[in-house]
Length: 247
Ligand SMILES: NC(=O)c1ccc[n+]([C@@H]2O[C@H](COP(=O)([O-])OP(=O)(O)OC[C@H]3O[C@@H](n4cnc5c(N)ncnc54)[C@H](OP(=O)(O)O)[C@@H]3O)[C@@H](O)[C@H]2O)c1
Image (cartoon, rainbow, N blue to C red; front, side):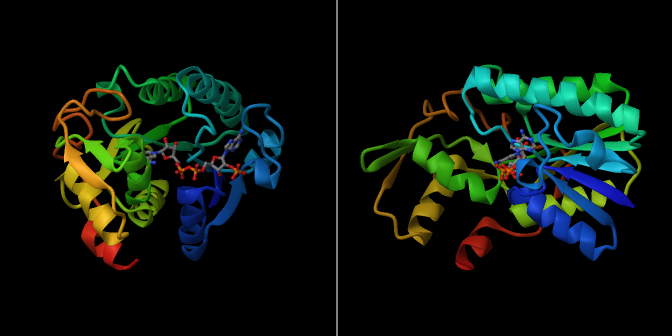
């Protein structure tokens, strides 16, 4: 099956392309580094020729609220009509668990806008909502840092390894479109503060976590339900502490 991976050079995209190739699919990674720009449309129609499935694992270079909204809206307005024209039979997109529960986050609002555009486009689709990647934990820690202290909320996160995200996406590629959502998450929910402590200890980083319920998530208020998945989520197998121990 021919699968186009928009964002195929990124963290998830590279892993996904490898898994799909190993399963025998014809894979086209599509991003600026392979001559495809989903904002201008350059190379998009050529990449989509003959494609049965498209996976969108693109990310915005800027997380600033207006820039990220404009990025995902423009990308959707270019890609989705091109996919309709090319006869793509399944659009798989990676979004974020709880995106619609953080209305004060510009990034999450942009992901919700991306999801809405997919639902309206007329291409059969599956939206895969993932929790935070293990690989994203340092960014969460850095965002909470004030001097030698790291202010982190005790609210639960259920992070997942990028390898498990890519494996889950590869499985969805081979399934029929849900015209709905699938949630994926790591095997256990842990307080954001505890995740930060585990990360700093593993990296022998001298910063100290201060538990602060008001710390939120990149400025957005967080509780135990905000970013954790519902009961039907597909869970990855790799635990955060096991992943950390691998170095
Ligand atoms: N981080 C998390 O914890 C988390 C959690 C849940 C969901 N997600 C979602 O996961 C997705 C993938 O994240 P990631 O960390 O794998 O991203 P990433 O490593 O930053 O990769 C981004 C990809 O987007 C491509 N790209 C950027 N601008 C483009 C453009 N104009 N046209 C085509 N491609 C473009 C990049 O291509 P070049 O390399 O060629 O520039 C790269 O392949 C995102 O949609 C994000 O919302 C992330």
